[in-house]
Image 1 (tube, one colour):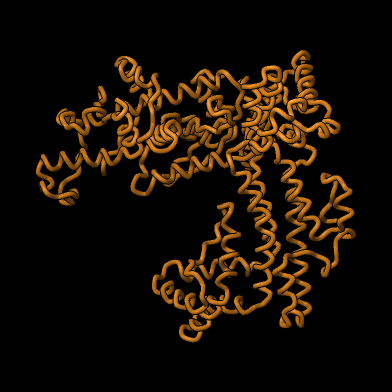
Image 2 (tube, one colour):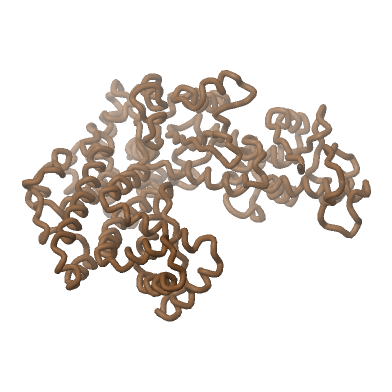
Length: 615
């Protein structure tokens, strides 16, 4: 039975391959395909394939293949559907019992179908960690529902669609403590957005903008302060090579001559969070080889595009701008990478944002002003606190490049360079301050849940009570539950006495740490449960982006008619299996459902997955 489940789950992910196999077998029998051929005949007319009972005699298909009643043009995998139902049922049962946060995003796939992805984040007792789990992928505009088509992707329709997914599985809305999404108006707008409906229907719910989206937008906005020709150079170089195998082969000779690795020139994408810094670093690495290559091309081809590129590559200030970007962009990239993690890193979010903001400020503003002024009141545009051009810090490479005689003799261009770099830093800091509230009542206090701070007696002198944080989370600790509030405070004050017993867990992640406390120290169970619930708050929307990336892997140009419910089933199966299906051990509930034929056919009717016709 376990072997059947493994094979069935694999086939769910590649259902079209099964369809092709049936079509191939049928065409061979009908004479449309030669017995020894492996490809369909192009001369044969296309026809709709009906289900054939003969297929069930095939030993490879018999254990899992099943017809669909009242529809001879469809077939089902009897085991895969059960796996999907069990996974969703088990996840719904967990959400019915504990607090959780929800993350949402929308996207349009290659088939021009707009879908919304819902991910839930909760504490998983079995692994003693906070995990993000895929919940559902559904159509925003359902052709079977004219009202949804007319409304479109509005905040209200997205909110109602999301809430319907929870109501259908009897998940109580009162268990929801947080909502996370990107900062677009339909998600985070003041009026008629998803977040505004959440605030209206769920008072006290914590709404978080994705910090990764925010960091990317800050860097993108700041890059507009630099000359447009910097971006033009990156795009023109990429476009010159992208469609020509001959040019790429010729360029490899110049790379070999300059003793460089044969790396390709990268594409500067506007939507990929981490692409820009990689493009800058690759151009700087290949700068000399590119100069030689385009110099030779200019002598032989005399193209306008080559003239623009060669002029930029021989401009010393152009390289200086790229050196500046090579220093400043990794600050955003490393920050972004850190918070793309699905681990419980929300406890350090405030400190990380403060560190990034202060580091950028210190590169162009007076140190005393930055260090002694509250970050929420610092004004990056305050000119009287700006450093002079010679005092600004723009990276080691820029400092070395400024010693170039060809740069020192051009005072006007040198002044423009400093002015644009200063503008970049001012805009970046202004955008960070606009998108993040340094006085946020929740994020500014969550660092007390870090293991090191929680066990520190010195930290108690600064944070003697947990009440300020608990009062900001009314959906975790009801304001009128004074008994629980007092228990939390008493346990918080006494918790440092476990410093010696828990010293081996200080370096663990916060969720692992508090999970172990909840298992070992019953006298601190209320404090541990509060911490684990607070750690479920979303810090980024990266998990939703990963779901859409998975969809793009199996919904391709060749499979653009794949139904959203089929994709949803594949994602649920992948979430259930976690890795290779060969080592997957089905739960007892799965076997019981497989053996229960009445339940099986009921699940088939409720979760139909259309097999695509080979058109």
